[in-house]
Image (cartoon, rainbow, N blue to C red; front, side):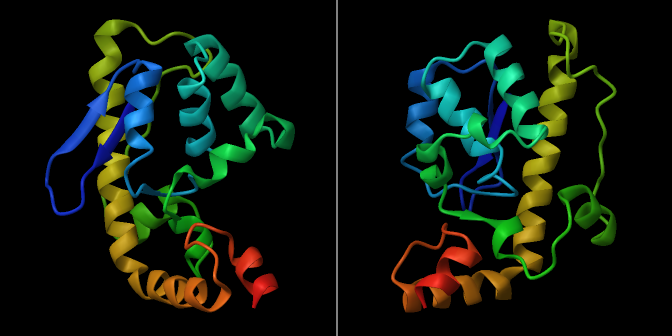
Length: 170
């Protein structure tokens, strides 16, 4: 499941088992996510390349297990910004949800098995909740984002580059 929201819109859009050409359309958007540079971008890029669901699962496991060879160089920069990276407070999305009093969902579905179609809505709801939470976390870290924009202006590289990249450039 892929979920996103257009800036200024209240509707969260989702796709279930999107085709590569549908993923490609997302690349023209200013994607802002949470830890997307280290996970979501690479999953999206792999699907764009035609990876099957089983191959995406295996890629996900490699990424979760910190196999840096599983990451795509091109994948890092399909987003505009990564909240986790520009945030001065390093913690996971779930911890931000609890801290900010946001709805916190867990999926009790095994990640190593196909999801039965009757549970797809549950996965969609989980994904949509993460999108809503990501937006709220972005708002709570807005000053960090402004600081990142200033840093990008000073360094001459994109907002999406890591803090380490920016400081090295400056």
